[in-house]
Image (cartoon, rainbow, N blue to C red; front, side):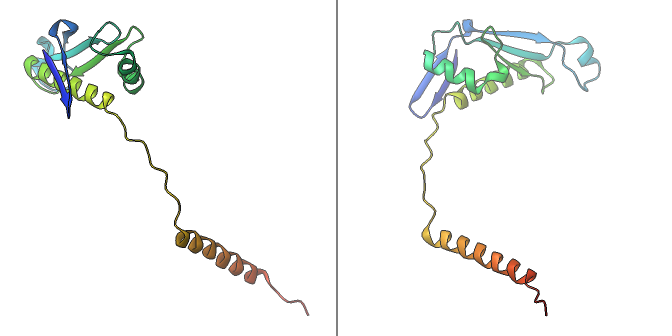
Amino acid sequence: MIEIGESGHHLEIPDEEVTFITSRSGGPGGQNVNKLETRVTLRFDLEGTSRFDEAQKALLRERLATRITRAGILHVTAQKHRTQAENREAAVARFVELLREGLREETPRKKTKVPKAAHRRRVEGKRRHSQRKKERGAVEAD
């Protein structure tokens, strides 16, 4: 059971909805790299799960678009560690973090007005700049 919880929202995803695929990792590691399958890819069927409502699924599809296939499968890969177990834990931790971030409600931006003093300073600066340029070109012909 994978638990995703944050300030009042608690969600559990059963192990049956998550599959793990192992493969050989790249990078340094000596003989380990050539013979052991330490890279772990976590797959989660976002479209087939009943844990999220349609609005949540749409939000996750939008925010995690680069990690979701056309079939609606979310992929998370971990190959940082030397053992399969550690990479599995890392993949689950990243999966939980991605879902948490993807489902977090953003606070709407509050529109603010430009203070009158700031507006006045900006316009005054523009006026001074314009005046300076006018003075540069003012050459009197006799």
